[in-house]
Image (tube, rainbow, N blue to C red; front, side, top):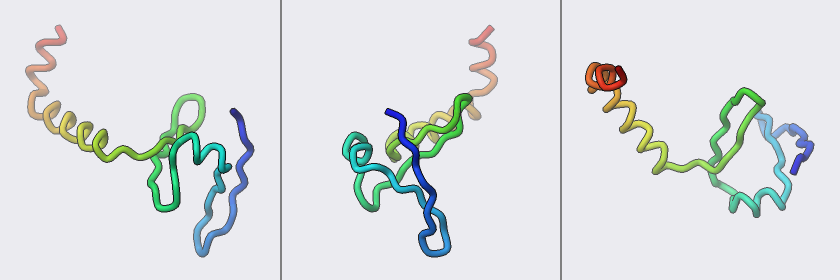
Length: 75
């Protein structure tokens, strides 16, 4: 579903108003956090997943620690 979203002034910031249908589809409500990612085709907005973020950070830490071993395995 494509929707045209309008930027609106919210205090000293600018916000985007999401249609109620999209909020229901994403199971979002007031105070929920979103992830905003730039992709090759534009932007992707999705619910923020703290558990996934923690897993990515743990992977990055182990990737740096075992960089040489991973490089050898990739050969």
